[in-house]
Amino acid sequence: MNKRVLKLAGPSILANITVPLVGMVDLAIAGRLGDAASIGGIAIATMLFDLLYWNMGFLRVGTGGFAAQAYGRRDFKDAFRILVQAVGTALLSALVIWIIQFAFLETAFVIIDCTSEVELLARQYFFIRIWAAPATLSLFAFKGWFIGMQNTISPMVVDVSVNLLNLLLSILFAIGLGMGISGIALGTLLAQYTGLVIAITLLFIYYRKLFRHIHIKESLKLRQMKDFFVLNSNLFIRSLSLLLVYSGFTSIAARYGDNLLAVSTIMMKLMLLYSYFIDGFAYAGEALTGRFIGARDLTSLKKSISVLFKWTFIVAAVSTVAYGIAGESLFRLLTNNPDVLEASSDYMSWLLVVPLLSCVAFILDGIFIGATASVQIRNTMLFSAASFFITFYAFENLMGLQALYLAYMVHLVVRTIMMSVQMKGKVLSKAVA
Image (cartoon, rainbow, N blue to C red; front, side, top):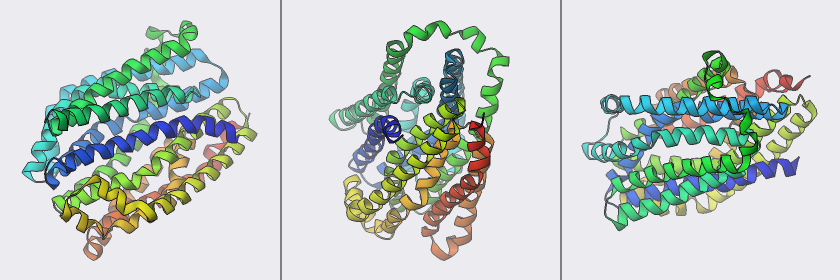
C-alpha cells in the first residue's frame, strides 16, 4: 500500500512544488517592480480570480471522485461520460465568466478597500488573464479525471509544463520586456492554453483505445448530468465557503494598509507552501478511496487511509522544522522592501503552527472527495468558514491583525474535527458490499 500511495502521490508532489514556486516568483517580480503597492496589486488580482475560479473547483474535485469510483468498477463508459460533462461545464462556465467580467470587477472594487494604486495594478492584471478562462477551467476537469483514473503522471506533466512556462514567460514579459504587472498576466495566459494542448495530447496518448466509450450527445443530456450536478452543487458551496476564508483573509488584511497587506499576502503563500506536499497525498487519497469504494474493498480502503495518515504526519513534522529554520529566509526571498520586512517579524511564529493544525484537514478533504461525500464536505466548510469570521471579529479589538491568523487556525481545527467524526459513517460504510 505504501508503494501504491507513493506512486500516486509522488508525481502530484513534484507537480505541486512548481505551483507555489511560480506564485512566489510572481510575488518576487512584483516586489521588485516598485513599492508595496505592486505586491498588493498581485494579491488583490489573484484574489479576484480566486473569486471566479475557486467556485469552479468542483470541476476537479467532483470529476476526480466520480472517475475514481468508475475506475474501481472498471466502467469506462461512465468514466468518459464524467469527462465530457466536466469539460462541457468548464467551457460553458468560461463563457459566463467572460460575459460578467466587467460587472464582476466593478462590484468587487466597491467591496474591496485598497489604495487607488493597488486597484489600478490589479485591473491591468485582471483584464489580460481573464481570457485564459476556458483553458484554466478545462484543466481543472482534465486534472480531476486523470487523478480519478489513477494516473497522476499526466497532470504532473501538465502542471510542471504550465508552471515552468508561466515562470519563464512572466520574467521575460514583466522584467525583460518591461511590461510590469501586465507581463505577469500575459505569461499566465499563454501558459494556460499551452497546458490545455498538452492535456488533450496526453488524453490521446494514454486513452485513445478507449475512445469508443465516448458518447458526447448522450453524456450531455440533462438526465445523464443529474448526478453530476447534484454532487457538484454541494461542492460549489464548499468551494464558495473556502473562497470566503481566503478572500476574506486578503480583504481584511487590505484594511490595515499596503505594508501589512504585503506581509499577509506573503505569509499566506508561505503557510500554504507545505500544503502542496500534503496535497500530493490528498490526491492519492482521493484516487484510492474512490477506487476501493467502487470495488467494494473495505480492507484495502482502511489500509490506504492508515498509510495516508502516516505520511501526512511525517510531512507536517518535517515542514514545522523547515519553517523554524528557513521561514525568515523564505520571506526575504519574496521582497526586499524594508518596511514590509520589519512588519513581518510579529507574524512569523504562525508558520510553526499551521502544518500540525492543518495536515489532517487537508488529507481528509481528499478522502471525502474520493468517497463523493459531498453533503458532508459542504457542511464542514460552511461551519468552518463561519468559525473563521466569528473568531476574527470576536478577537480583532484585542489582537488586531493577529486575530486574522488565529481565525485561520480555528477554521482548520473545525474542519479536522467535523470530518474525523463523520469518517466511519460517510466514507468507510460506502465500501461495504
